[in-house]
Length: 91
Image (tube, rainbow, N blue to C red; front, side, top):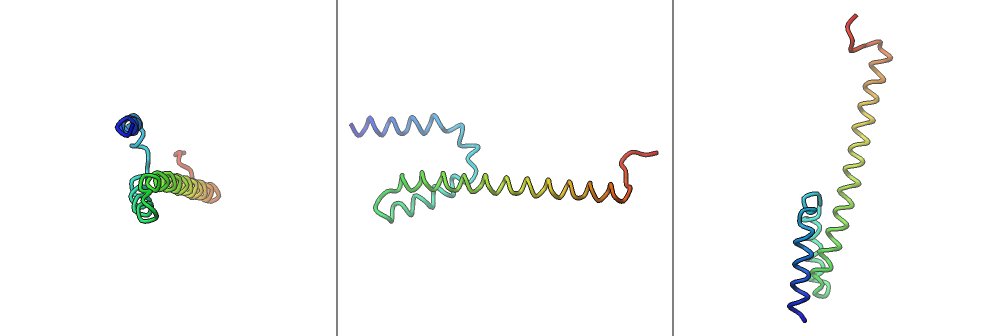
């Protein structure tokens, strides 16, 4: 039964491998979570999974905040230029 479970787990991981390219922060979270899970009762796989999910979520939040900050700065610069009378089009 154990070889069947192991082969199933490996197959699932390999099937999800193409999506791992978009898993920003997952490797760092999985490494930390795996170590913490191992120390806290030999649950390295569970810790690695949780670490991956948590760190991926944190990276998404950080990227969203950076996008909003950049968008706010761009709109502020455009608004200031409009108030000064600067235009991009020549007369």
